[in-house]
Amino acid sequence: MIEFITGCMFCGKTEELIRRMRRESISGKKVVLFKPKIDNRYSEEYVTTHDGVSFRCITAENSDDLYGYDADVIGIDEVQFLDDGVVRFCRKFRNKLIIVSGLNTDFMGKPFKFKDSERHVGELMAMSKVYYLSAICTYRENGEICGREANFTQRLANGKPVYHDDKLVVIGGKEQYEARCEKHFVIEEN
Ligand SMILES: [Zn+2]
Image (tube, rainbow, N blue to C red; front, side, top):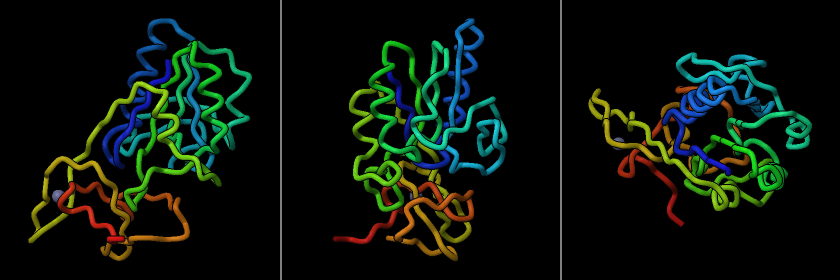
């Protein structure tokens, strides 16, 4: 069984993944948690949320690094940053419990593509039980936060929305990205 925890940035995906891994571990299952190497925001050996909650993990440079571990439950954080080989990995081991967390869309509102690939996370979601989480829109108007349900991630540069960029992956915290509601998520019309 593959479970996919998704939603925009700041919706608590990693927190939920850690909660699930903790629970499986308490029940005596052998759990292993991976995170892609690209994400070394806080620590190399732990998956850590924006709020500082953490769980021990193994850093994977690519999907080949996921193989060879003896586990009943496999967790993968930020799955969208891995190469598309992760789809094959998940299909191969779906007799175990695989829990992944990741973004569904990029800052342009398009399905998030795996590393160096035209294939995207929707392919993995199609074979998973999907859990959608939402954040709170932090768009500010006259000093007030919007507060509506947010399902989109806006990339910002100097406080202004960035619509497209050659570099899809820019790792950052709250200074570069904001969770936005439908009304305040701005994309370039095409
Ligand atoms: Zn809003």
